[in-house]
Image (tube, rainbow, N blue to C red; front, side, top):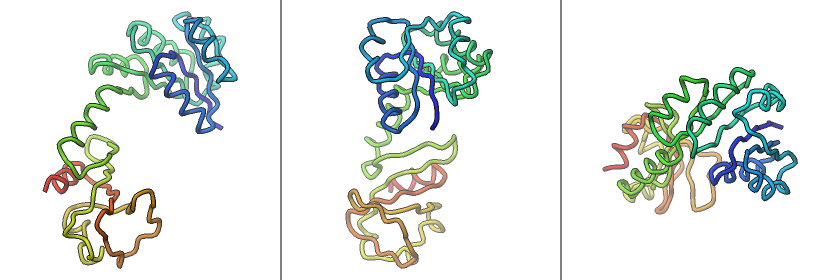
Length: 215
């Protein structure tokens, strides 16, 4: 079972913590606000009132014992920056910090964060893509060049076989699977016949997928 130290129990921290618990992750939540911890304490085995800007307070949490430490503080960047740095100093294996601006993201990376999440930016970016391209339902950006997209299958593909359409060769799309509503086709073969309403999950260069979806 993975273990996560979650520092900062605002809206983002609470949502993240609830999802981690649902996945069976061992979560310790920490916040300097006593009311928040008293409110959330019943949901977590470990919920502590701690000022994490204090080195000795953090040291007492045995930082190296956690697989991941998350700094989910969004309203006090100085605290987020300092705590991120202290966590790495104390031997944290992997530190994920929350940013609210691009400048914050850069400073957090320079001060020890292994990964920076930027919820408002990421959500807005995804929404912009979905609003602009009606056939895109979701996507995951893997890096600056590659992504995985969920796209509605073009109507003109209905009744045609995968082998005849050959999306990899023609469009640079690597077809991972097909969704029919909530049903996932777990064993696609070359003779699969597309139907109206199908969604396909494709992997490839982001620019290629966006170009295809925009046609």
